[in-house]
Structure formats: structure tokens, C-alpha cells
Amino acid sequence: MNPEMKQLGEERSAIRELFEYGNARKGEIGAENVFDFSLGNPSVPAPACVREEISRLLREVPAERLHGYTSAAGDPAVREAVASYIGTQFGVPMSASLVYMTCGAAASLTVSMKALCRAGDEIVVPAPYFPEYEIFARNAGAVLVPVPTDASFRPDLPAIAAAIGKRTRAVLVNSPNNPTGAVYTEAEMRALGEILREKSRESGEPVYLFADEPYRELCYGAPPVHPMAVYENTLVLYSFSKSLSLAGERIGYIAVSPRCAGAEDVFSAVCGAGRSLGFVCAPALFQRVAAACLGKSADVGEYRANRDLLANALRAAGYRLIEPEGAFYLFVQSPERDASAFCERAKRRELLLVPSDSFGVGGYVRISYCVPRSVIERSLPAFRALIAEYPTPYA
Image (cartoon, rainbow, N blue to C red):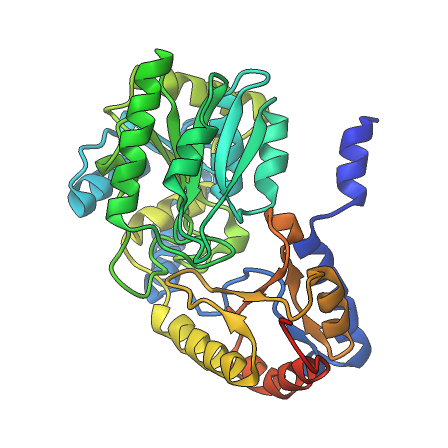
């Protein structure tokens, strides 16, 4: 066997490990007694269009067509719908010939990295970041280069510029961000575009922008600018997992900007990477469902209410945090320097929190508030008792 793969299988991500622990614990003491904030598993029901479209397709489309293979890059009508939506909604000209349907954001990321990275190439990413980025980059033969954000988890643009070197193939951004909930402003994105443009001129090769966007619709203020509007050499890596509450159905897409240098060649490399990784023909039924629900989302107001309830209660109890602007995570400063030790202490009160170490920073915990409201309400006494164990938190 491949020893690296064996190690990955035995050492699951901190998030998945905690999720499995929570499942076991619920079996032991009852689900109502465990406060599981580990996984970003949407708790708000999918919008009505999802059920309606599934029902319509099952009624009207013959099974052999509905469940059969699509083209390797995706159903042509679905790709056309995605391209039309991007063009209409964001004012960014888009071609269906540059849309590749994928098995969710993980496939979008792994395929794009495999398509564009050569052995030893670097991918610059603001930290904190989704832990699996490291695994995906390594699988492509690339090296992830984390760059710290500022104290409010905003992108440190000068630091990003300084981190881009001769081996940099791409900068990877995730806005709204997992785990912080930060949403990059249009000014920040445009400034990043200028940095990438200048670095591309210096190197004589494009420095690509990978825009990981599973949380685009889960935004509590103004929606983020579309990345293709601010930089030409952009690949948008999208998933319907969060917006449509379809995390388990694994459906998304890669969109290569038509303004990308050698866009057709880039798309060919995407197709080749999808082939080499076995990611051809994304789930056929949910390709069609996603196309019918473009622009729709689960009730973001439910997540906002969860955010407000939990954030206000934790602040009142003495925790330190920055209000998230999107997604469905609170990134809370640990009352002690060792976030893992704090999370182990939290387990004694059946609070399942993810330490920040695997996100590329120390001293914080991620709390996924995409849970039923009742879970948050029942957990608050445990949160208050937990911080009371620290006579001088944050000392």
C-alpha cells in the first residue's frame, strides 16, 4: 500500500475526527445531550425548488436518460445554464465551453490544482484556511504557502505580494471564509487583482486566482464581487453544497474566465485533470437540479439568527470573537493559548469545538452554528460554565 495514503486514512481531519466522536457520544448519552459544532453540515432545509425539480425530473424524464452518463465535462444544457447565470447575474461574459461540472468544491479544487500546477509549484493562501487545501495541493505536487491575515482576518495584501515568487502558480482565496466568516471587500479583491497582474508581468507567466466559493450566497451584507470581474486569470471553484443545502450530493463546477490567458488550453488541462483523477461526469440528476435552482439559496436568515444568538451570548459570557460577515462559523479566541487543550476541556461539557491549529493558525476554535436553534440554546449554560473555569481568561 501507499504509506502516505495509509497515514491519511488513519489520521482523519480534525473536523471529521470530532464529528465521528460526536456520533459515538450521541449513541452513548443521547443526541440531545451532545452539542456538536464540528461539521459545516447545513441545517437549514434546501429551498423548495430542489424538491420540486427532483419530483419533476423523476416524473417527466425517462430513467435511462435521467440517471445515465452525461458528457465528461457535464450536461451541455447545464453548462449553458451556469454560463448564462454568471453572465446575467454578475455582468461577466461567460462561455459554456469553459464550465466543467464537478463532484462538489473538493473536486473543483483538486482538479484545478492538478490542471495548473507542476511539481514544486506554490499556491499562496491567506491563513486561516480550510485544512484540506494542504492535502489537495500535495496531491497535485504543489506546496501550500500560508500568509497570515490581519487581526480582523482581512487579507494582508502586502504580505500576499511578498509571498508570491518564481514558483507561485496561484493564489487561493475563500470568501466568505471558512473558518472566520470574513467576506473580502470589492476594494480588497481589486487590489489583489492588481497584485496578481503585476506579478504575472514580472514572471512572464500567469499567476492564477483560485476563488473557492461554496459560501457565496451565505452573506449577511452586500454580496461579494465576482472574482472574474476583478482579475482575468481566474478560475471560480463553486459548490452548491451550502447554498442549496446539498452537501451530501456533491455537485459544483469550475468556471474558467474567458479572459484567462489561453483559456481554452486551461480548460483542456481541467478536463485532463478530471480524467486523471476519475472525476468525469458529475452526478447527473443533481447537475439538472442545480441548473434549475441557480440563484436560489436556503434561508440565510436562519443562519443569521443563529449567528446573532450564539455570538451575543458568547460575548456576554466573556469570550472574544469577531462578528462573521458570511458562511456559518464563529472563530472564537481560545481562553487559553493551547486551543486543543481548551477543546478537550470543552468535551467534558459535551461541547464539540474544532481547534484552529489545522486551519493554519493557533489560539482559536471554530464553532459551526449551522445547527438547529435548540442546540445553541441548550448549549449556552455549558459555554458559560466552561469559561468560568478560567479565572483570568485571555490573561
